[in-house]
Length: 258
Image 1 (cartoon, rainbow, N blue to C red):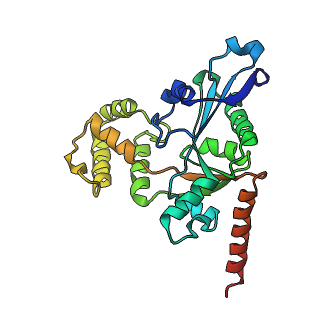
Image 2: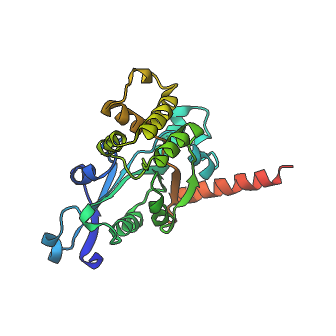
């Protein structure tokens, strides 16, 4: 099948066509670049347009693992505006990689990622992912991975959900979670309610919530940030090499310190 598909540049409308299949349909930043998978001319009518889509946006101003991955390269100026300008010059954020559910597990997402990276002139591509099985796809494509474990406040709630048969990383549908909560036995319901109330302590206005779909939606919005940070240095971009050289120099200096 893959030999009948090709990667081309797309537009936001291509992302919109598949956005509903992502657990977070709304983008934080508007697309900077979009790439998509479509059928080659002889087979175009046999495939949807798009089959898969990849969206790149401007990077988030602060991602803690980026500091380690680049040895603080993007904090070298005293002025925050200068640091942000530097970041936007070097980095694009891989915000979405979505495949039409009818074509999952066929290597299409991997093909899209590889072909996109081959076409880019951008020095650095980075992304965050909460989904463990995608990590291998990125690392096999040349991304470095840095794990960002969540605080105990978050892991306690996630563990509590797992104890009652819910994995909130795999089950991101509020409706499915509400249905499972409604079906719980009394003991499970008391346990998870206690854990939810403990989790909500400290969040602004969280005490206004009683058990409800609105509260479930709020909790899902607070479930921890992605667990893995991934970064790719473009081997064909001189600016990427300058960041790697900076990192190497910093590591050597650190090793020389007593």
